[in-house]
Length: 361
Ligand SMILES: NC(=O)c1ccc[n+]([C@@H]2O[C@H](COP(=O)([O-])OP(=O)(O)OC[C@H]3O[C@@H](n4cnc5c(N)ncnc54)[C@H](O)[C@@H]3O)[C@@H](O)[C@H]2O)c1
Image (cartoon, rainbow, N blue to C red; front, side, top):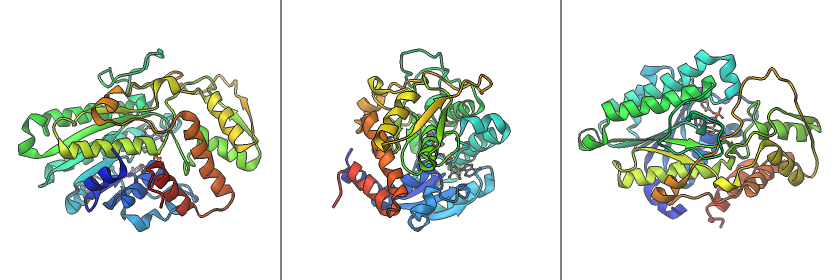
């Protein structure tokens, strides 16, 4: 689906975006701005002083509500007041290592937050398409070569992954119990879930994620310590899954029954790098940098091998990755170089979106 087709879906529509102050949420806010949507955001304030949200002044492009998804009444009030045409639910405690430190808070935010959003849909008088953002880590991971299909069993070893698997089960239950596609004309709610791979792109400054850690070491001329060099992940540029979510929303708008299901979004299976390959490519593009592997055995468990099958999104949504992994890495590093060179980051970020859609005037 190209930019103009998306625009014909989203222009003038009300879109509620939870997690709009985060990494993916900020990019999504700018994309929705270009598509002409009326955006209301719902999230906690950005954590980092240099958060992308601040850098691009994303508050100019949405009605920003700073509030907690654990506050059930507030979530419901804001949703019913806004009467959205679309909801993208991204707000989450999104870090694996943090989830080991704060499992209760992780489950509360991810599971109860999702529950509050889904339960609020009961109070809506108008049709709405809701997309719950989970992750590739929802699958029971057998550390096998074959990629996971949407129909496979949910699992999740660590609290973050498991909390997101719970969100999948929760959404499935709500879809069966209260918003059954067979009775769409009675409730007019369409709900889908999306599972994307490890996302890279400009503006991610989170701790314990590979690109932000690498960029910090490049900026400071420090040695990068790598935890799992051989771990294979479905890396992709942030614009790819976000474009996938928007494409899915547009399909749900046309057929709210058929597309109320789960979709994987990831890179092509043959194009999946391990952590060390990603780092080497990034250092090559940057032109300098060093890393060494940590042999600390006392690290919490993280998946080593995880591949996503994206045939369903390709076939049903006509979505396909635009970037291979090298392009995703170079697009990402160019963004951080722009920060390093003190360029206008708001303009640079909008330009990256426009170039992705081929609409650079
Ligand atoms: N970044 C990735 O690689 C990746 C991969 C797959 C899925 N995801 C999912 O995509 C979504 C966005 O991820 P991200 O990388 O942008 O994360 P992020 O940490 O940058 O942003 C998280 C957002 O959620 C909000 N939030 C957290 N706790 C909240 C609470 N209690 N109440 C209200 N808002 C709260 C934050 O304020 C922020 O806006 C998450 O659901 C995440 O699980 C991310």
